[in-house]
Length: 433
Image (tube, rainbow, N blue to C red):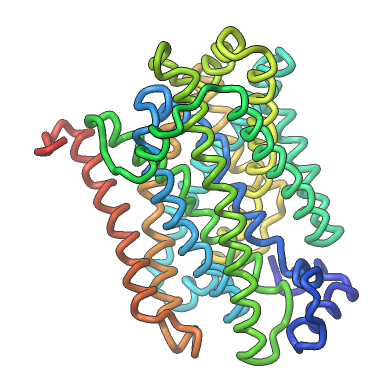
């Protein structure tokens, strides 16, 4: 998004309202809602169809025991989304642009390549999820569902020409649909709440298979494209005239991140809880979205199955929109060239059509895409920590030592888990697992 494009998204009335709040003339809490939006948009990345696939496998195979992974991943996500938003607010630049400006050319080229692979893996999950939902809901071939998803996604993206608020409201509505669906699901399924508490706060892995699912959860929860996107969503939203106003913007952003990602985390936990309550005792082999849908009808009734599909469809369409926005921002940031949305949409759709054309299992493709994402994830995480810790980039807003240390610890954890998964893939036995 260029500077002109970002400024066009703000109406004169909204701009005056934001300026009044920042200058201290308007203290109404409703006026602070003008600053809401970026974290809500980014949060859909944490409730995309890749989450459905990994969370169904986690709940069906391992019950409530991997809920702690969801919680840990969500806490890491909150920290990095807050840092990404701060980067855009303070510098007026997004992560991809700053990486191109401050890192050596070979590093930038490698970052771009890895980020493009991650963007394609992301879009594979999101695009296939929406297509699967349409296919099951309307009993149409998966290929037709993919075409419809692509058309709907592009139509929503065209709404961005009317400003950022209509697009944010559409995505916010779809986020609400996903969240409400899982509130209803939890009222239908039988839940062992003491086991939920244990699974949430007592870390354990029941064998090497649980490790691969755990890494998949990390890949599905902490998303590379969301880290890039959030900095772009905040970079031109409103103009801060001094560090006092920037500090207010950062505080507003942190509150929104906390609220939006708490909702996203609870939805993810609800997915695991639903899958555990419905499938773990009698159907632990349920590992596919299609199987989960068909199994829900006899187990919990047609209403539960229908609600599951509605949430999948809302997730697939909204996350596909956000994924295209992020991919466009990544490509433009690393290359410096404007990329039309339809070209970006076409580029990231190709892998999805290849998967379907080859007859590969769609849910397996979703899970594998999340593992790919977990390997790509450290790249933007490391870049974000480095840039937000540099005083020549952030000035007075550079990370404090404990923030930088915590962020690096989160990155190291993900790197370690990825290394273990890679060793297991090549048949290396790891003591204790």
